Length: 282
Image (tube, rainbow, N blue to C red; front, side, top):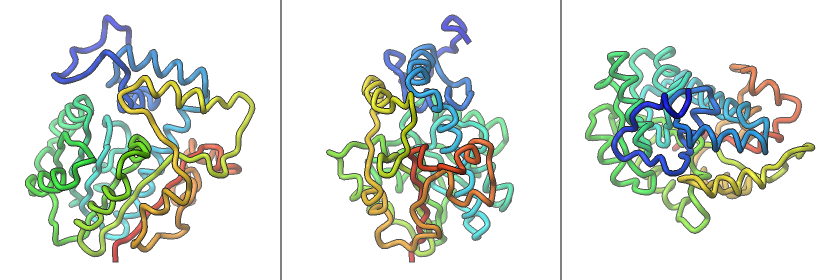
């Protein structure tokens, strides 16, 4: 798709600089992106040729996590930072296991919200599922509006999903306090599924220019920040970690759904630099 073929942007969409949700969509082979996003993605690809596979590893981790929760009987999900719809959305994975599953999607990016609404309308599922535009930094507002949709029952366990999100919140923000606020709101028996980027224990290879990628992302709508394994693990304080605990995304429960992207790093999952975890609220 050339710049001349780009669709008219929804109201509120910033096309002056690349947006991380739309760039991620491009990495995954989607079409909900504009020339500014594709040009940026191409720059990242030059610095880190594995980036498209890494994006798929993250998406696969989301799928395995949601599938695990659905098999545990979780039928309602709050997916914050849900991004642009692509193959393997939360409602599709969950509903394939539990047809009565319900999802509230939340994202700050107008394109992600508009495309999510369009997808659910096309599938005749808007109402059973819902989409909100909101900022993860405001737990009280998101929780209030999520319940107002009547999609979620606050008396029953909920799967809270924050995959590919927390590393876009900086070290100067009270991120752990924010996550704790969400966890406090969840009923007993709920789960928290999340992921993060790290440098801890990461294998480096020739041509691996991750530092350049991080610099490039400073030009986007949301620069990313690395955290240590211990800092990521702290998000799960007070929860019962599901085995194997904090693990590399490419290896987490890989035997349950061995995707091509994740299996590619089976011999060295550290190379992806992505950690994942799932915890249950007692």
